[in-house]
Image (cartoon, rainbow, N blue to C red; front, side, top):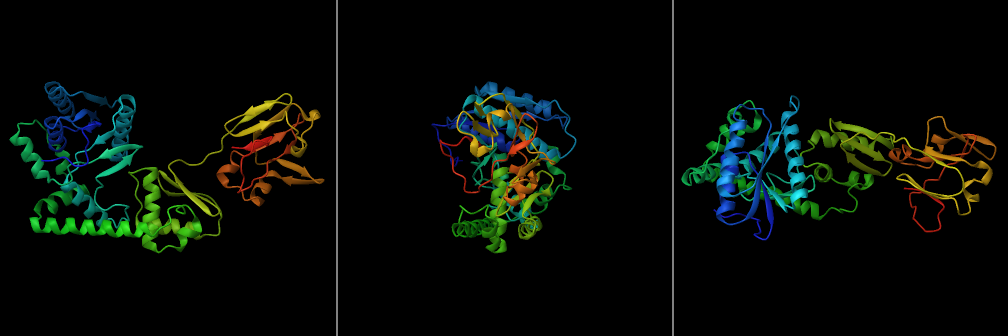
Amino acid sequence: MTLNNLDKSKKYLLACSFGPDSMALFHLLKENNYNFACAIVNYHLREESDSEVSGLLEYGSESNVKVYVYDVKEKIQKNVEATCREIRYKFFKDLCEQFGFDAVLVAHHQDDLIETYLMQKERQNSPIFYGISPETMIYRIKVIRPLLDYKKADLVEYCDKNNIPYAIDKTNFDISIMRNKIRHNVVSKMLEKEREQILKEIKEANLKLENMFALIDNTKLCDVNYVLKLDFTSQCYVLNYLVKILDQSLSLSKKNVGQIIKILKSNKPNGQFVVFRGLYLFKEYDFFEFGVNKAEPQEFKYTLMCPGVLDTPFFYLNFKMDTSDRNVDFNDYPLTIRNIKKNDFIIINGYKAKAQRLLIDWKVPFRKRMIWPVILNKNDEVIYIPRYRKDFKLSDDLSFYVK
């Protein structure tokens, strides 16, 4: 067996479960003199988990390979699969940052690849890659899968032949889970010719995606008007691509994409929308973006007792300079600079104007409205609201600007 995409000058972290797949990869790395360590997470969801961790620690000690263990203390009761995935990849990320690992190795194999593809078809997903990618980024760490050319049976046979210890996870036989059902009822019963045909199908599907993306202007992926002009297949690809950048575990169905396109076409120019739990769409006039957290107002308040400088996360102010263009004079001090409030108003040419109305008229994106600053004089009267300019450019002579 040979390992794909690996470099002996790199330092790797092997994600290990003590199953035959990851244990075969452990042995292959050791036999081929790769620089690596192991990481395992004990979720305490199965009776066997403690003995599996002990087995890996023992084998690691015998092989002179460091094994890092994360012992989960909190009880996992909801969204078990997603929560476990988040826990382990955050653990891997911490280890990579702390000890300088170049990439995480995962022992996904050819059966996993085919199962994933069949699940994508079953769910009518619109992925950015069919099956499993040999390399990807998860939580900003590089993840490599060097065993995608090998069947599950090859890896079990390799372990047995080389007396490599491993354990079988009994939950893998629960066919009420879609992946297990496909694994045992479809993939395990495939003839060699059928397997070759579906691998060819996956390769051709990915080539089509690659050719399609080559025609897309990747500088305009968050431009509402550009995305609306694409055909539906391209829209599916682009939107999934943006979501995967945010979080590799997230995926949009065609129904989700249809929902998003409807929002982008709507007359509502500005706002945040729930795509599904854990994914938000932010539409801001001709721009849109995805996020995993709801946008919330950020409260801030600063006081300037006399002309001086304030450099904050929200704005920069240098009132040692001329402030006549900011409607501020010495008699206004002390000044208060805070985020805009719902009932704020300002007097313009003798007329009372609602501050929020001005932001709407200026087409300030709604997330910026939540942190837009206003300046109040010593009488708590709003005397200045910085104007929003979409084409704003920073220069050294500015006495005030929003970050």
